[in-house]
Image (tube, rainbow, N blue to C red):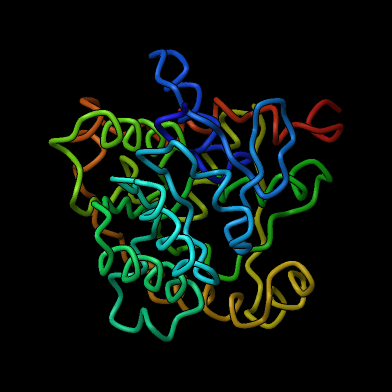
Length: 279
């Protein structure tokens, strides 16, 4: 019997959370749409047929936000006897236009479905994942400047380890559950500042080149759907030159201050190293 189901099993947060649970000796099962390691169960959050087996014997769930089949998931979770769901949501749900935003609407729909159910629900709402910076790795490895439509746009990069530790805290301490937490990193940083910090971690200066919205959209066409690309650009434009607010939620849940972006960059330096950096 596995008391905890951890969805999104191929993701960095789910795997970090699984490691924490394993270290504490807490029974759990890792679930993924595409299981890629022994012991991982099949759970496609868009396919209700995979829910019963994944939820059997489960009392708590760490849930990635997938709106397409959330009503079926809630129904099966209640039937299976699940008591507590910890949702990895997004602070974008707090925006005034969240219902219309491609970045927020899905998270908001999942939040509402869970809150309307008998399941005890805890909402983790990270701002910006530090892992988003990995999108720059290809440019760095190829020796090309990173293209930024808004170099001066601020965000609050939070380390995936801090998100995992926050999830671990609310899954294992009943007194912390049943509420919403907005998780941020330790600093509000521009994209240009983040690149400079990554450069320090890899030991070389990283050039960037400001580009237009249209050029950036053309470059990501085929990787990021048009509406999402437009929503990202609008978000970056709204925070261009405007530092974002930080919270103490990570420290409240984990007992320590959020890891810095410099720490994240050092932890992931190898992802940015390529032949160009060794020349």
